[in-house]
Image 1 (cartoon, rainbow, N blue to C red):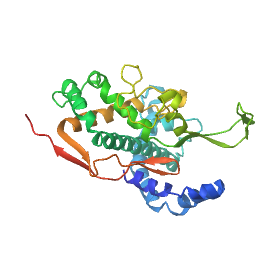
Image 2: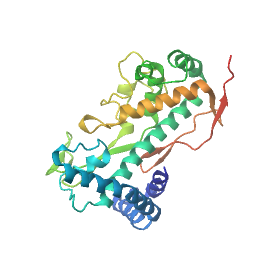
Image 3: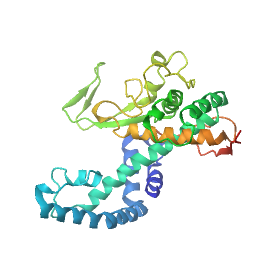
Image 4: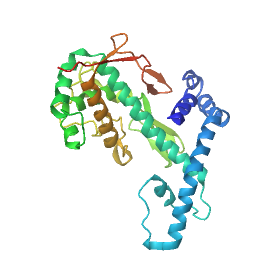
Length: 301
């Protein structure tokens, strides 16, 4: 979590610099990471200290037992099995960097998504009784040990997907042009090496996909449409699409729904202002509003 907090601080570059010239914005990011990453570097050194003995032991086991050795199935082993990895002299900086990046991607996005869900739930009392009733039906003992229980929470899932649609990043899914050029249907061309991103707001707020008022929150928009939060499509790109869609999205969604279900059952949740505070947009990335959430313990009947 400390790594995520420090990385977020480095990413807070004023968007106005990009309006002056994209190069200035890019260089500002580079300078921040080059000279302002002392705390991140210390965290990375701690990770290296922890993983080095484990990696050394795995490589020793592999040399000793050869093909008979059964390696663990985890991120460390995945990185060690990548082409070009020198197992005689492992690059611990590279391995630790990837592990920290994965940690950031998994923790920060799940925390942000959960916070956005709770802010939307807390500020929309018209949904409280209905969602509470669903949680009491499918989670009567506050013990969500069966994924089948979670999959039946269709109202909760629809509400979550709508929350993610309206609070996701504005600009994301950046790719680099690796061919000779990228030509659009209108004739516009981008040369090799260009970075291309998707303006997600244009997708998630499209009136052709979401009706005449796409800005309006409709918690039950997806009910009965066989469109769960985990389903990626051209009109919902929160988790990407195609072969590069987020591989951990189902796990993350179940995490969010489990936590949300328990919180809805145990607490009456409201925002301090009784309204939905707007998110902050920094460099195209959406951050939940830090307005406090108020948790009032429900009285047992």
